Every structure is written in C-alpha cells, then in structure tokens.
Length: 148
Image 1: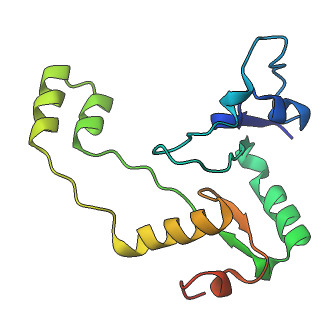
Image 2: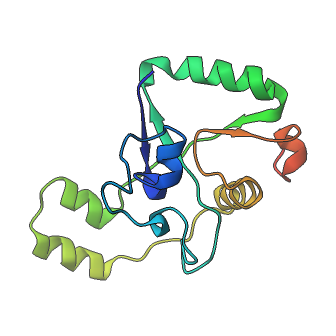
C-alpha cells in the first residue's frame, strides 16, 4: 500500500525508523528538532504527531484494519473540511494581489462555531488528534461531552 508521511514528522529520524518515510535524515543533514521541538503550535509545547496519507482507493482497508484492531465501538471517524475565506478564494481564482490585499483589509471573520470548536478541542486535547480516524480507550461518546 502506498503511503506518504507529511507534516512535522516528514523526513524525521522517527518517521524514517518507523518506515513511514524513505528519507534518511542523517544522510541528508536534517535536524531532529523538525519532529520534536519545545515550541510547536501557537508557542505551546505539545506532543508531535505523524500524518500519513494513504491511497484513497484503499481507505476502506485501513478503516477495516483499525476497526478490527481497536474495535468499532472504541473508534471515531472525524474529518477536517478546509474552506477558502474571501482573500484566499480570490487568490485561488487568480485575482490580482492588489485586489486580494484590499479585500483582506476590509474583511472580518467570525470565531469558529461553538460545537465545531468543542469537538476539535476535546478530541485534539484528549487524544492529540485532528484527522481521520481516532482510536479511543472506550467508546468516543464516553470520552467527550459530545453525544454519540
């Protein structure tokens, strides 16, 4: 199965030793701090994670393995939906940078919706998770205040 390590773990010694990536960080002079550093996100120290992209045609095989290994009742599937806000969507459609910058100065954004933020915060803080499959020690509905 083809897979690709990405994010902070890409090209790190940890990912190389786990065979997640094929890049030897020692041979290429890469620093261990790429994976593990005191300051990660928003200046906060947090545990590193390894993001792995898999072949989309074989996603069900991975889910079947995860459900078999962790049990379906102890698993949760979540997703991250990326959206473009005004300036980025204009940039994606090729508008001149002057127009994009002008619009950006005039836009104000709402804070994330309470429910979405609560899900992200609870799952992320409790399990170091912000992606597709999240194994939990017990059913997810018992691990968070979010109903099952």
